[in-house]
Each structure stands twice: as C-alpha cells, then as structure tokens.
Image 1 (spheres, rainbow, N blue to C red):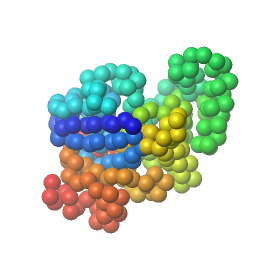
Image 2: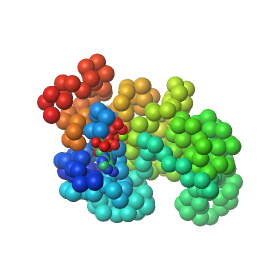
Image 3: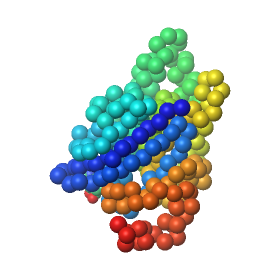
Length: 255
Ligand SMILES: Nc1ncnc2c1ncn2[C@@H]1O[C@H](COP(=O)(O)OP(=O)(O)OP(=O)(O)O)[C@@H](O)[C@H]1O
Ligand SMILES: [Mg+2]
C-alpha cells in the first residue's frame, strides 16, 4: 500500500498564481476525480506535479510514502512511481513506441529475452486497447488521431504500471468503444493485486474529466471540485451528477 500526498500546493506560471492551498491524499487502488471549469488549473496541477519547467511550486509539498519528491526532476518522479497521461500528448517523430517500451522494459527486466517478453506483453496489451500494430512502428503519436494518441499513452501506462497516475482528460478524443477499452484497462491496473495476492496494491489514479462517462468504467472513490485554483468541495461520485445537473454555477458563486 502506497500513498501520494499533496500538501498545501501553490503553483505559479508566467507570473500568475494559478493554484493555492491544494491538498489531496491518494492511496493505492483509489480513483480520485478532479473536475472544474475550463481554466480552473487542472492541467497546471498535473504539470506542476511532474515538474514542468514553466510551472513553479511556490508552496507546499508532494510526497510518496512520506518521501518528499517536490523538487525531483521529472524522470526521478517517474522513477519514484508517478506517471502522467497528458491532455494533449505530443508527437515525437523518430522514436517509436516500440523503441520506448523496449528500452523501458529492458531497464526493468535486465535479464531474459527482452524482445520476446516485450513483443508478447505489448502485443497482448495493444490488442486489449485495440491498437493497430502499424502505430507501434511509427514515431510516438506521429500523425496519430486524437483517440489513437490517448490509446498509445494508455498502452505505455499498462506496460509500465506506476504507483500513481494523473490522467488528464483521458476521455477526450476517444470514441465510445475506445473509452470503454481504455478505462477498463486502467481499472484493471487500479484493481491489481500484489504479487502475493493481496488486494489494495493497485495503481492510485487522479482522473481529470469534464464528464461522468469515464466513471461508468472507472468508479470514483472521491471527487474534488477545483474552482479558480482551489479545491472547493470533495465528495463521492454523486458530486459528478450534481455538476452535470447544475453546472459549476453554485460553486462559482461561493468561490
Ligand atoms: N504556461 C502558462 N502561461 C500562462 N498562463 C498559463 C500557462 N499555463 C496555464 N495558464 C493559465 O492558467 C489557467 C489554468 O490553466 P489550465 O490549463 O491549468 O486549466 P484547466 O483547468 O486544465 O482547463 P481545461 O479544462 O480547459 O483543460 C488558465 O487561465 C491558463 O490560461
Ligand atoms: Mg486542462
């Protein structure tokens, strides 16, 4: 069982204070949903968590299992067990998904036949996510459609499951069938048991979304409303239905 703790996080970008006093506590196997109007600071939160150079943490701490990772570089944060699925995944021509996964899986499985392991594991997961094998041989996300990019991101997540993941608008660009496949694959990681068969050892996730569709397959343990850079309410899944029914008006008025 691991725990990601975000304590009193404040973030500034381009001289603007976007987030202040954000507190969040996510345990292994939990699904937290972060909702809020456009421009509320959700992507800023994800970028700051990952140490994007344009987003400066002005206060607070990020801890995994009590270890302060706030000032670590992005790759060190990834090593500590954090992953980030971007709202708009970038194209990386010249580096294929196969290259990335082979290198990363090789680093985590230094012995044995890496190529066989990789091709078996990746093929099985690609099939589960309905990813055409030709996409794996192209530069990462290069000339891929919006939905294909999200599936490729999900494939990387499934191949190298982290302790915690932030999924920024996982549902954007995915058709209904793809949304079901991708969310179900993420749910499998959330429900994963420890090697000794213990429950509650799966990935903890923070899902940023505008809609409740994704939660049909990935039920939320907690829902947080981020308005104007602050978490103004935390509740259960019924909070998503309230937002769907009333919009953000009632919370905007009080913020
Ligand atoms: N690098 C930046 N430079 C200047 N302003 C920025 C930068 N990044 C974010 N902002 C501003 O900070 C605010 C929060 O942006 P952010 O992308 O975090 O919103 P969001 O909640 O993810 O919105 P959406 O739902 O539209 O994705 C916005 O007003 C945005 O214009
Ligand atoms: Mg965003």
